[in-house]
Length: 306
Image (cartoon, rainbow, N blue to C red; front, side, top):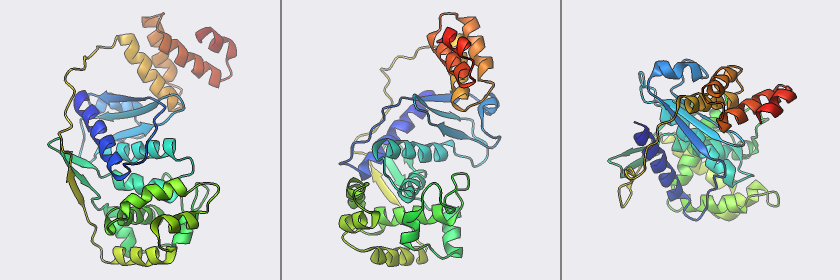
């Protein structure tokens, strides 16, 4: 199961690069993936009971957590692919606008692959389709002006017209009109503190805002979203040569404690202290424990651990 999760994440990364072949995406921070064997073993680490999987970013390490025991219609990879896209965009483009970041993340959240080769992208997202039917779309100038402080933007409420329209615009730019997808990369490269968004957009796509806004309105009204089906020339298969190493009980406790530390949870101490007790020489447990003490201002204990 762990190998299957690993393979799916690698396949997603490979598919992500297809749309931006000329952009080199940076991932300077390592990502640790924790796969829980059951929903019950995952429960103490979930942000809420309905979570099937989540992505926890950090300055020194990112965590992806999920369980392969999925209940109902939940798909842990939907959230993980969304957040993984944010990671790739944020590490590569310091000035990426919110509409682009969220629209692309939503677009890629529906990624699926079968037979390790057949890729499907751009499946309609029901909530977004419904909102776009019921509401007027925002003027592009309004959409493009949205930032983290804007009332339109709420990271906790992804079922809003902002998310729906950002997804629809990205959907349209990638598959709605031939030749637009490769211009997205050019748009990002042009955009920055020295060039306004409107100018960068017009230069990259060769058309003014108003033209794209009219095309987008027509695209949404036709209520039919194209699905991209493709395949890798060669199968992306598991690397069976990679050796598996069994973690010690102390290492398991240290990883779980560090995960909770990065989620800013007080129960991180329970796991980290147990790790140090099991293995007094385990460096990663001491380091995490030191950072936990440091955050609370317990400097003497922090120095001792570090």
